[in-house]
Image 1: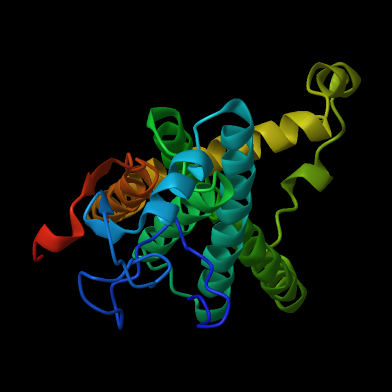
Image 2: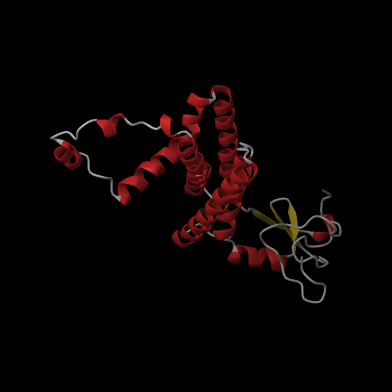
Length: 250
């Protein structure tokens, strides 16, 4: 909102709430005494219309890169928030996917300064899916860390339950060859496997809880739809000039 003494046009959004009627510009809120323009559904003065033509966010490589970077940041924030909520509360709520989709889409539009289009939509959908699905990884790691002390405690209290067959058997003569045939995976291989498991987690839920997993997929699809719609962009059309004396009522 611009101040009365130094009005600054907000070209991204026409501010309808609390503004005067059709005789005022809905961007700078100044009185329109003569000809006026229409920017989509908003009344604009000649000065704002001219500035909008020159300052509109245009789709470019730089705008897309900025939007993508902001979208990645939004996806990371959404991932952290999703996983933190699940870890703290112990509840994995699928509706958080809607918030992640909104966050990613809004961040991309913010980064691109309003530019949108098909490539923004595809990137937003992929980032939303990645953020929601990869949130399962920190949740898995958390619960795995919790289960290890409990398992160790059970072994200390019930040593008879610990497997001991392998201790009574003599070591196999080909143990060296089997160890060399199955080397420990590298960090990169491990990270790749974990990432693939994370990306597949929405579908893996179907095997554990069929109905709940299906509902989660539907909600995730709606969240991705949010991101798709937000990043579609809206072309700005400027019409006019019109005669101020015959300005139509909205």
